[in-house]
Image 1 (spheres, one colour):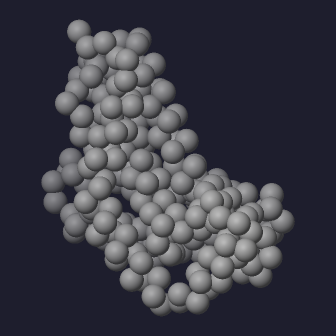
Image 2 (cartoon, rainbow, N blue to C red; image 1 turned 180 degrees about the horizontal axis):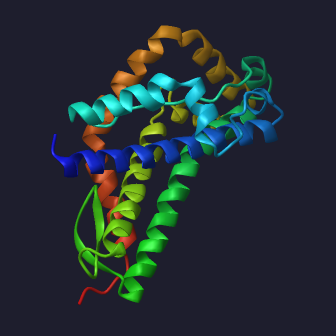
Image 3 (cartoon, rainbow, N blue to C red; image 1 turned 120 degrees about the vertical axis):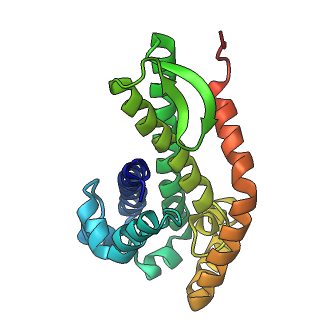
Length: 235
């Protein structure tokens, strides 16, 4: 395997691990605020990746590293435990819990975008023809700015991907739970009940969501890029 591809794959994995940890910790924290301490008791209200890895070792270690090693692409998952009875009793709280994960991803993308804009303003970074792995380039090749530009670019791109993908309104993705914010209390309760009944059919939701996302992600990524470069004057 090409050493450069292997190094980039490892970087992607580290960003995935940190971003997914923030995603699940945000779910867990908002559940705690809403009165469900299940994730708190399991150690998931934490930015330490280890409790999340212990819960989903296959999704957070095996599958991502296998995808990198075989060059088939990084794919992985994690989850935060919650009390199903709490979700049925407080469906609006459960909907806010669902929104917290994608919100964390968009916050990380925003932070990376702000840091890259500061770098552009200070002359540390330069605009490039953007791609998933390179939103900005270093002003000087081979220096610390080179690695920093790549790290921030991947944080920006990967968190846009994670945020939008998880907002697709098919169970078991967060977007399905978020629908409860736009319904009445009884409507949110009905959504929770349907989610519980889906069971194995949730896998079908994942397949549909991935096929759909594969079509719409390039447009969503383009919107993110236009937002990042909005108002920037190219020399």
